[in-house]
Length: 213
Image (cartoon, rainbow, N blue to C red):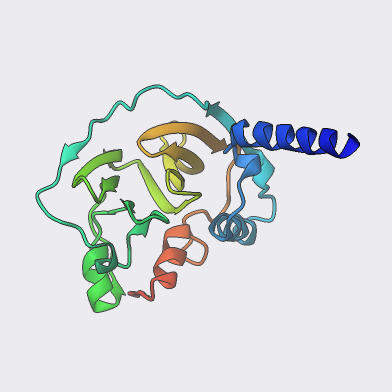
């Protein structure tokens, strides 16, 4: 009789654990790119602390996206572009598209910079649709990103604080096109734009791209 009760209790715990919602708040996230990002800031400024990222927003039931999906007129092959960040099931990919010659750089091995504007696009490979997660903007762009699972991804970003003309790092968490979390760094990071520490250049190095002098 006791064994039967134990089996029933264990099964009940299993059902509860299956139905429990997974939280993707920043404190629960762990990824090598996130560790690298924090380490870069720490190397640039010893006063940096990951705990200084303050939650501005988090919701398991976010509002509808303000942007709309649009049709693509080409077929995308996930293995064709090493700069894109592909979901584990390969149904979606992120294009950080800095309007800065990155595509050319992947062919030539040299990154020379380029235009000011940037954007980030999420592409639905199967349905040939796309949506701009960060629309064209000169003051808000993604340095890097990673997928947590087939539908959740995290973007490591920066935005310009126009009040003091300083760049501020922030982290946004997405459930495909829906923003579910937003964390901004409460403070100033010295040497944030120094090429030795700048997160975007670290990403170029991982892609095997030489930074032009």
